Structures are given as C-alpha cells and as structure tokens.
Amino acid sequence: MGGSQLNLVVDGAIVESFDVHPKLSELRRAQREYAPDLDLYEAELQCPGCGAVISEETRFAAYKDQLLCKSCADMQVAESPAGSDLTVTNDPTKSPLGMSDLYHKRLVDWNVNIATGCSHGCSFCYVPGTPQIRTQKRRLKDAADVDDSAAEWGDYVLYRDDAPERLRRQLQKKASGGFQGWNRTDEGRGIVGLSFHTDCYQSPRGADITRACVRDLVEHDRHVRILTRSPNVLRDTDLFVDAGDHVTVGMSIPSLDDAALRSIETKAPPPSARLNALRELSDAGVQVYVSMGPTLPTQDKDDLRELLEELATLDPGVIFHEPLNPRGPNFERTVQSAREHGQDTLANTIADLEDVRTWREYAVEQLRWVHELGRELELPIYCWPTGELTSGAYASYAGWWREQESPEQFAGREPEWEIPPPLPSSAPKPRTSLADFGIE
Ligand code: SF4
Image (cartoon, rainbow, N blue to C red; front, side, top):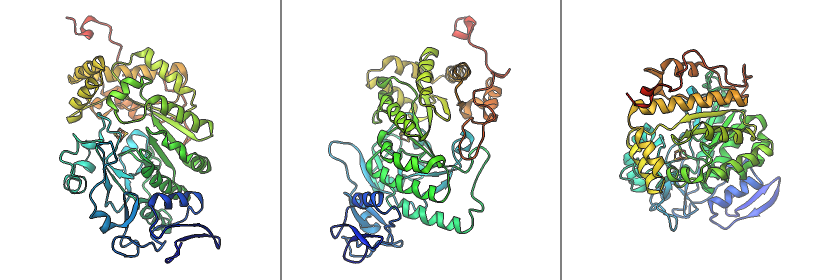
C-alpha cells in the first residue's frame, strides 16, 4: 500500500484498491485475507482529520470505523452504538504487552489487553476492582464520561486499535535480544494471555485487534492462551489450526443453565453457545481448555457432574475450576442483578455468601466435589482456591492445591499426572453434623 494510490500490493500485484480514507475494519480484513504482514504504521495512510501521515509517532485509532491519527481521534466524542448503553472510544495505552501475576493460577506470565473495559459486564467480574481500572478514573471520565468505573462496568470499552503494531515492535525488540529476560515462571511457562482484563472477542473490532496480536506472538515463537465467552472466536479457527501447539483456546463455562448465567453475565453469550463454539474448535483440531468458573452456589454435586460429563466430550487439555467469590462493591451488584432477572433462589443463595463462614463452606464444598468428580471421571482438573481460603480452617487444603501442577500439556510441559491425585489428608470433611448445618 503506498502514497495516494491506496492500492494494496502483494508480490508486485495490486490485490485490492481502497477509497482515499479506508475504514479500519476494511484494512484489518485485507490484512487477514492477503497481507498478514501489513503494518498500518508503515502504510503511509493519511489522517482525514488533519492530513498528517499516520506513523508510529502520530499513532492511530478509529472513530466510527474511520482511521484517524491519535490526536484527531481523541478530539471525537465517544460513540454509543444504536440501541445500546455502551460507550465506545479509544485507549492511549502504549505497551500492550504486560507482565501478569496469573501464573499462580497456572495460566500465564504475560497478558495483552486489547481494550480497557468489557461489554459483557459480568456483575461478579474482578477486573473493575483491580488497579488497572481503579487508577484510571480521570482517563475514563475524560474519554468515556465514566463517573463510577465499577458501577458502570459493562457500559464502556476503550479499544487499543494500534495494539498489534505496537506489540510487533515490542516483540521485535525482545527478539533482537534473543528474548533474554523473557519472564517465564514454572507455573506460567512464559505464556501470553489474551485477554484477562477484558474479553478479546467481544466484538468484531476487538477480534480484529486480537487476531493480529496472536499472529505476531506466534510468529515470535510465543505460546498464547486465549480466554473468551464469545463464539466470535470461531472466525479465527484457521489461525489457531495453523498455530498448532502454540495456541490454546478456552471458554468460561461455569454452568449449563443459560437463564441463571444470563442473570449475572447479562450481556455475555449464553453458555450453550460457548459450549458449541468450543466443540467446533476442538473438532477442528485446536487445543482447547475450559474455565469452569465461577460455579454458582445453587449448583449441587449432580449439576457439577452433568457439567463435567459434557465438558469431557470436548477433550480439553485442562478444566480449571473456581467457585463464585463476589466481594466488595460487586457483591450487592451480583445479588441485585440475579434478582432483577427473576432468579430469586440464586439471588438469595448468593446473598447468604456475605457471611464469610458460609462462603468458605460453599467454596470448599464445591472444590471438593469437583476434585472428587475429576477423579471419578478421570478428567484433567485443576482447582483455584482463592486467596481468602489460604488462611484459616481450610488453609492446608487450599495450600495443597496451590502446590499441585496443572495437568495441561501446553507450552512445553509434560504432566506428571492427568487426573487429580487423591484428596489429601488436609481436605475438609463433608458437612455431616447438625452443627455443620447451623442447627445447635
Ligand atoms: S467477560 Fe470476563 S472480563 Fe468481561 S466482564 Fe465478564 S468476567 Fe469480566
């Protein structure tokens, strides 16, 4: 692509011509179809706002799909897609690749977030409570008129449109040093996650950014873990198949009850659609895994068995499990959301978890059930007891899980075991006495 011609030239031949000011989605599509190496910083595109040539210095972002230099994009008012409460604009983050502490969950050592905010707006989501959101109050107010970043979670998304171009430069720099110093813990295995602070396939715009990032990571011999709730991920099946053992794709599937989950994951696709999408990926030969979290306090052992039997048919590399743990401002939000969507039993049961002892009993009971079912069904289970369980009565059981390795064969690890080992002696006993049920 070059000068005022706006022709995309591949191997000396014009493969596509564009209007003078092409849409960002058109350019990303052309990148997918003909020229994966197309770098929009180097394409000599002109900003329709100020006439500047778009480069690494000017950066770029989209407004109504129009590609603008960053400063012209920043002057635009945030968009709201017709019929939705969502506010969409752009994010100025310069370094898409950052280190992650999710190695302690055997997930990743690195994370690439393609946006700030998430349109799915799950009421229990931990992200609005993290420093990445809490420290951005001024930016969110200026860019998207956000007054309360936690209460309005799900109503704003700030995309990082030039994340692929910037990531490419970060990777090239690291590659020139032979990736010396690349953070690689035993638990996180140097894996890069997309994205653990947003859903990287929540929209076509997000998916375009994601695809280009994944491709560059794989080209640089990095292992990539994708986690999503969006069947949109299927559009990149070809990329994942080509990437072979460098990519694993996971879906969050904590329950098969569409109505219950819809009540607290109000804008996310239903779990039945996620299950079907993951099956399609698995059938295509893509390595898949499941995040069975957060499971709901209304799910008993039979429900969990039914879910695990269904998940087993996907042949997942690992099934991570985590019970629900709404805390802080998202506790009331989760109860209220369930109630507003007619799920009174779920709302009442979650409300009971405000008592920390009740929450601990529920969390440990579900962890134990999944552990037992994993052994019974011979499934590659890995449980995530949250930090609050690592002290107090259940500390030794939770600590035991944290010492276990994930059974997942990914990023160079051969598992020492494929099904969960027997319950350790520190595992809490099932509730059997009247006192255990609150009856004196
Ligand atoms: S999809 Fe993930 S990041 Fe998005 S709101 Fe739900 S839990 Fe949070």
